[in-house]
Amino acid sequence: MQTNLAAFIKDTPEGREADAILRKCVHCGFCNATCPTYQLLGDELDGPRGRIYLIKQVLEGAAPTAKTQLHLDRCLTCLACETTCPSGVEYGRLADIGRHVVEKRVPRDALSSAWRGALRTVIPYAARFEPLLKLGRLTRSLLPAALKSKVPTAPAAAGAWPAPIHARKMLVLEGCVQPSLAPSTNAAAARVLDRAGISLVRAESAGCCGAVSFHLNAQDEALDTMRRLIDAWWPHVEQGVEAIVITASGCGVTVKDYGHLLRHDPAYAAKAKRVSDLTKDISEAVIAEGEKLKLLIPPPSSLIPGQRIAFHSPCSLQHGLKLKGKVESLLTSLGYSLTDVPQTHLCCGSAGTYSILQPELSQQLQANKIAALESGKPEVILTANIGCQTHLQSATALPVRHWIEALDEILPPRA
Ligand code: SF4
Ligand code: SF4
Image (cartoon, rainbow, N blue to C red):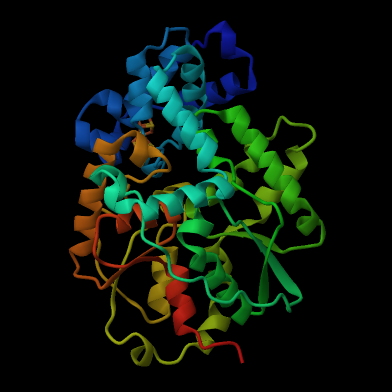
């Protein structure tokens, strides 16, 4: 695709990056076939090819409008289009650049601004989110139906966190909402890695990864959040942790991108790259220890007799981290029986704050995903990202859990 970027962006790092991405796109439209919003709305401007054109026009000097912003807002950033694109177009990076430019030029109305500001003020801070969640649980019966479904019931207890006795150590991202919504996930990860001879450790004062603010187009605020997390982690990195483990695949995509996002910051570029290089999704850490763990597992028939499991692969896991099929293969190799799930490439509609900001589209995607997951008559749904987990749980009677908890349960306790 030929480009002629406008002077305001042409010679900036963002302009050069956007230009290189745009020039890769051959306008074939293959990506539209796997785009959830294009499938639902049937509008070229609600598919990746149309959004790429919208961004191109803005970067070439056209004035963005509220309609431009709407089409970009409706994008889930699920990155199914990147998986499909035969030309390697990095749609996600282009969307980040385009959204940032549009956000600065198209003012939002007061309600939308206040709502987005409130999300940025609460969600990334566990100390603010947790009391509000507790209040929501106490007043659940009084809430309107739309809000009620967003307030999950009290989670299962986390269980014990093993003492850090091993020479091999990995650091874990605690995250912002996950400790309140599913404290058992990281504790289960710690117990599984402990059986493999690895201590999972937590960093004092480490908080959100920055994804919430970044995807609400508050990118400078997000970069500050990332710097704070790097500062909190750095002493552990210097002490030689062998990996940074992330149990929410959505956060994993962001942390693996720190090196790129902070590459122009002289004080943080090298540290950010080191953090990204160390970052692993929990599936990568467990798969690397798979043989050791398999030896610990008694014959599957005695532990999970006939339990049928549907695995929901989050977009961040399959399209963002490019780990499609890895957890499914691991679970199968460990003896689990997975049901067939049609159209696994499609988003469930959670997508960070999307389910709050675009409720109609989100609910359609949620209903389609639940139907697909339930079609094989499973008894439990397993997934790999807290956002998908709570979003799906709000629409099904089946238990929805992180897969690491299921693995934790079948491994015998440490002797
Ligand atoms: S992004 Fe890729 S798949 Fe989509 S139109 Fe461009 S080249 Fe084709
Ligand atoms: S990121 Fe997802 S929703 Fe956005 S254009 Fe690509 S496929 Fe469509």
